[in-house]
Every structure is written in structure tokens, then in C-alpha cells.
Length: 259
Length: 253
Image 1 (tube, rainbow over the protein chains, first blue to last red):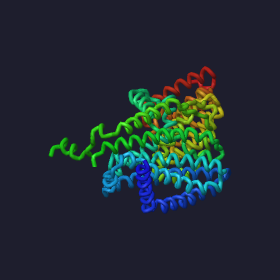
Image 2: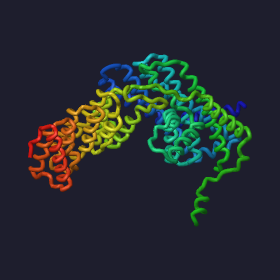
Image 3: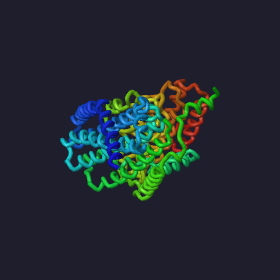
Image 4: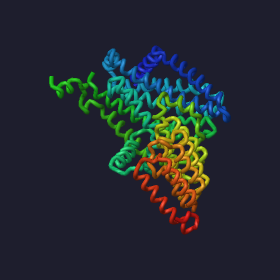
């Protein structure tokens, strides 16, 4: 068991080193500065609720940026390991393949947490610390889930463009799931027809296996809407359940791969 | 190599399901079951009725469009159309802020001037509300939009005129629109029924003399070349003369 833990930790350390070498920190810094400047302009023209406007816009921009960064990193890191045969060396070790997945997910969790903390710091200028902490925790969960999905898709598709396209589509669908579900429940389509039935039942079916990211990292928590710690329970629960599912699916896929 | 063989060669080799340890299979099945359970037990998405937000400046929308103002306008018009159908709820038109609604319609029309969608919504959707004040806001929007491009938007003012007459029961307003419709589309390819709406309105208002003068003037001017329109106007003139004789306002032959 200690050896297994050691291998997981080694893979995690190696992934963290990959993150450092891929200039993820520099990119995160650029993201922070850009978002800060752009939302600063928007805040400057706000006639009222200046703090809320600034915080909400900055949070929404940072959320998208942080998720985009970690998705790019996760997919590219996993594909690079496959391409330069580093993965072959790891799999040749006398250890289960699932340890590779666990090591990766552990490193992604640390990177997601670091990104979330970095994104949360400037928000403290305009929002109460409790709301910012809740937002950051939710962002870390969301970023980790997306990184785990990136790991799975990198093994499934083995092509950066396909993997990233699938990831973006998945993310957008998961973010807009609530609106889609409500539309399916109370249809507003003007035209009747087979397409409508197909879309409605399709959405309802897909929702069962999608994470409810619409409940995550709501920028409104930082504005006038207010934040309640209870809002984090669904976030943590969904992270636990869907994280386990993604990890199991990635391990499942990895075991079946012939390298 | 044939295509199926090439595809098979390109496919990543996979090992059988037996290569996956039973533990991983169990974890996967449990995690999938947990996800299905989580979704099944999660509360259904709720909805809360939102007010229509104020329309941003046109310049800001143009920036947001990233060079595709027409596409943004189309999407925005659809969003506006379904705003009353908020997920899980339905907002009656009477509760919508029509001043904001008008501002949104103006923005989308400005971004895609060739589109008639906002005008159609104003007349056929929002203009049908049973609230005269709100109807007037929509009609005023259509009227102003018509004045900007009479040649392409005449049909909406024509519909607006009928709306003002039949739903709003404001014949003076309808007549004003009908007059603008006739004056602003002079020499343009607009059907006579639309241009001659003012005559019908004058009849409805009992202004037979004014209607007769108008028709007589139109026929005498020689502007009307379409024989069907000439016939239509002659018939109206005849009918008006009979009405006038009954009223005692028409000159006796």
C-alpha cells in the first residue's frame, strides 16, 4: 500500500511539474490581469451597484478563463504523455493502471484549487469574504471535474482537436442544462412535429448523465443576490458523485487501451 | 487497402473487457448508479419570474456582436419573443414593461434593419395586449420605424392602422397612420389597398365628403395607373356619393 501511495504521489508531482513547465502560472496571471482591466472598464461606466457589477463581471470572466485553462492543460498534458511515450514507461511499472488516473486526478485537484484561490483574491476587493470563499470552493470543484473530463476525453479520442471540441460541447451543455430542462418541461416551441419530441426527450435523457454545473460557481453569489453556505452542498455532492464516475470511466478506458 | 480495412487499421487497438479489473468495473457501475440516483433525487430546476432588463445602448450591442450584428439581432429577437415564456413560468404581456420592450425592439431593428421580425412582434404579438396604453407604445414604435424606411415597412404600418381602428378603436390615430402611409409611399410599389386605407377610415368616421374629395383628387391626378385600383376607387366614389345623398352632404346630380 505505501508503494501504491508513493506511485500516485509521484505521478501527481510529475503532473504538477508539467503544469509549471507549461507556464500555467504565467497564463493564469495574464488571465487575472486581463479580466481585471476589462471588468474595471465595465465597472467604471456602471451608474449604480458599482461593486456588484465589478465583482459579478470579473467572477464570470475568471470562471470561464480558469475552466478553459485547466481544460487545455489537462488534455494537452495527457496527450503529450501518450505521444512522447512517457505513459508507456509509467504503465510498464508494476502497478495498476488506476494509480495513474488517481495520480493525475490528485494533481488536477491541487491545480484547480490553486487556480480558484488565485481567481478569488481580486474578488475580495468588492465582495464579502464568505461569498468569495464559497465561490472559490465551487470553482475548484468545477475546474477539477473539467480536468477529470479532459483526462477521460484525451484517452477516448487521442486527438487534441476532437477531445477539446467534445469537452467544450459538454461544458456548455452542462452549464445550460437547467434552462434546457425547463424548456423541455414547458415547451415554448411554436411548431409541432417530430423534431420537437426528439429534442425534448433527448434533453431529458441526456440530463441523467450530465453534471449539474448550472448550480456551480454562480457569479450572482458575489453580487446583490447574496450567498448562502447551503448552496455549496449540491456542488460538493455532485463533485463527489461525478468525479467518481469520471475517474472510474477514465480507469475503465485506460485498462482497455493497448499501447 | 479498402476503406473498411483502412478504418480498422486506424482504430486504436483495445483489449477485452476482461482486462479491466473487477474492482474498477464495480466502481464504475456504482458511480454511474450514484449519478443516476443523484440526478433522480435532485430537486427539479426552479424558476423565478424576472423583469425585462433595460436595453443596453446600441453601440454596446454592436461590440458584443463581434461583427455579426444581424446574427445577434436574430438571436436577441428570439430571446425577447420568448421572454414572456420564462422557463417554468409564463409572464402575461400586461406585466411586461412596454417602454423597455420597445427599447429592445428598437435595438434589434437597428442592428438588423432588413429584418421585419421586431415589427412583426410589435404588431402581431405585443400589440394584441388588451391594454390601450401598451398598444399605443407598440403602434408608435411601428410608426417611427415605418418613417425610417417606408418602402419596405409599409405593411406593418398598414397592420398597425387596422390595429388602431379595430382593437384600439382610435379612428383619429388610425387615420393619421393611414395618411402617413399614403404620403410617405408615394411613387413606391405599394398596393392600393394599403395606400387607400385612409379612404375607408374616412368613410367609417362618416367623413364622406372628405373621402370623396380625396378619391376625386387621386383619380384626377393621374397618379394611379393600376386599372384595378382605379376601378376600386371609382366604386368607392360611387358608394360614397350614395351615402352622401342619403346624408344630404353630396351634391345632387
